[in-house]
Image 1 (spheres, rainbow, N blue to C red):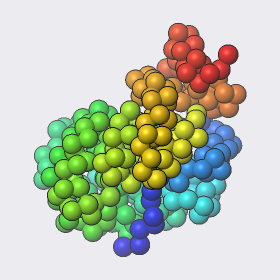
Image 2: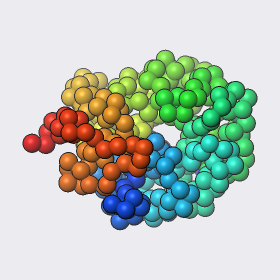
Image 3: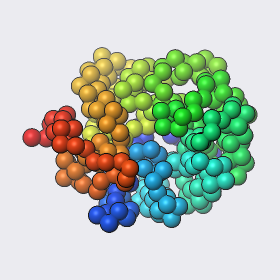
Image 4: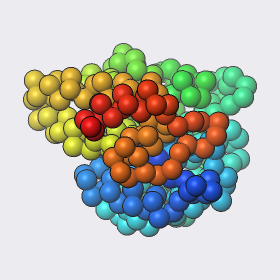
Length: 294
């Protein structure tokens, strides 16, 4: 397996821009990814739920991979969201990401049927056997309908070579604490629940996987720096001011709110793909207030 890059800090999720004709806007995607890197993101993760990966064709999916890796050009690690309903297509996406030069893949188990722990573990083992780059296991039952216990996550970390890290998005801090306890701190975990970030850093999270840098990168970076320095008074002050925006973008749906915010900031990337809808007038006004746009 390829050696892990040091994946840490603010790991930014770009949205997937669309043209007025509902095609992937490759120029705006390239500009957005470059801006995220230039404003300080420590890593880039396209094709998660923020990137509307569930609504892309396979050719669009591959194009986003190619553009992202080309634009980043080795400046920071790139982790490709490779999740799909079937194990076969998850493997296809993960193998494409590896060939394109991704540093790792992030995989969320997605299923129409409720999967048993045995089936979940086999899914990850099958993908791991097909690629040579690390896997970030992504636990987000709110979007996948599948909740993986800390014990299962640790077992896969111990038994599947490629499983080297976990993104935990349930918003339950005790899960991070339990994973750390079960592995004596050896399992790197990353926070995926925006409103929980302060507690997550205090629990030892190695990074923050977030769409917030699309709109306000500096508070994210400042919060991480304060946490790294152990300055929890400063970290809490940053978080307290930032929290209303974090709560808003999560509650309103990340593709919808991030795209709405970028439009308000004069960096429009089109609207979400149906069945998602743009912000309504009231939410757009509230987001403008949170972004301090008059």
